Image (cartoon, rainbow, N blue to C red; front, side):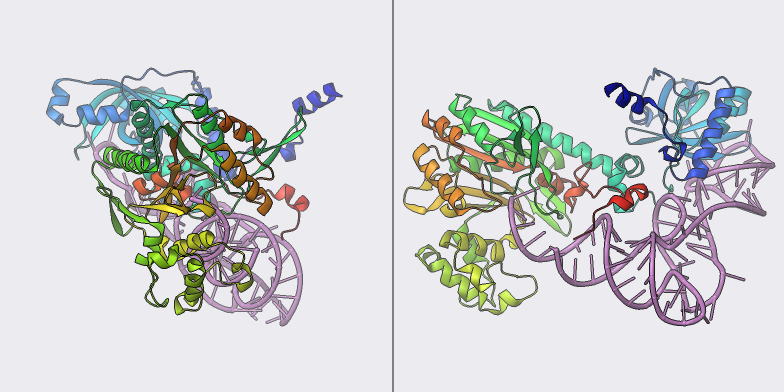
Length: 544
RNA sequence: AGGGGCGUAGCUCAGUGGUAGAGCAUUGGCCUUUUAAGCCAUUGGUCGUGGGUUCGACCCCCACCGCCCCUACCA
């Protein structure tokens, strides 16, 4: 049977089922024809390598200041390569631009110089081809620094055309599905992902400099813990066990703190089987880091220092233009969660609560009821989760406090803000405050109305941790682990030093620093529904 | 998941209940410093898919598919 299977793979498919060529068919075939003509000239369509002397960017930055006279007097020889992105024929000569690493460089080819065969090759080139040019630099009549080509080489043939030169590719769906075209056509896209790489680099540099070591912990977890979220489920065949894609690395990183890795971090993907939105992709990148002997106050400071450092490096200052606002990272507003609720209480939501009122047992419930009964709760944007009366009853004071915060305050946290002292009820992995056990030593960072970070004094009492895990499991729900992670409890039972830890959303931080308003703009291949395939249309299950 | 919007040539977009349009790209010509090169000619469409109404549907109605926005879940 195995041989048959192999034969199946090797056997040419039914011609009708060949995936090539792609649309637009006519242009694809025309380019294939050009390719054959090029091969008739004895030119290899997909050669092995090209020794360039400069990138287009190096040419422009190094020789940009040279005048036409200087370039004539002292010839600068170059070999440079890139993708052909424009072609302007002029009979027996022609101009073109190549694009290399995001930079455009003009080349000039004329029959007299490149010869009959070279010019024939030039005429057979299509926009999108990768080419190498040998020549020297000069300035055109209009002053543009260009390469006077003495030799052209085809380095790779493009069988598909690029989008239109002026408007480029703007269809959002096409941009995400064919990111490779997006990257060629839209300079801004390349910039975003360059900035993203620098952000990650800067985060690493910051932590490395402070003695943190980078680790990689499992992506496949037998128990999905460390956060409240629905996990993806997968299966390992040999072990015949279901595994969860991790929703957070937290519990593994803290095992490492138990093991004596006092300062540890990981930058990697988390997976949450939840909704998609402007701010949510099912897989997203988190930086998580832990430091022994520190607490959440230390980490509020450390986090602000780290974010400020990244902003300074990337933006060249502490002000970042984001949409209609200027984000000022020079200082972070700090409010406790209860203070934030009071501070941002809407005018049309009844009497403004006080911190004392929110701190009293039953206080958050009466405040929620006041809010629900007010005009604010009925306004279009405020759509209180607690509005179904039946649901509300089972929420605890802590949960209601969290909801009130999200409802009245979160959207207003545009300038960088640290919110601290979260309800213990919604902070199962966090130490509680000694003076008020209803509050956890936890904080979150908000910018532009988005949560970008979450940290706390790590709970290291194994007995208390097990009690809280057990309560979670008893509560049930898709977002909560099905069982207590006993190995984690065992790890804590060996003694974990006091420690602070936090997670920082790399995608969201990138959004802020690239003025991107959808998380999909900062993820190279965001999750989309698989492309419609007419051949498989019939076997598609019905929608629901 | 609920509400709203969008889907027309490869790309960017017009358009009307009565023979489907432009620019760029393609193809054929002219053009040896242009640059959104230019000029002449040319090709390209199951108007997302499937039903329905109608003498006639790209247009009106329904369902489905995909994307975007808002809400919900969440970081």
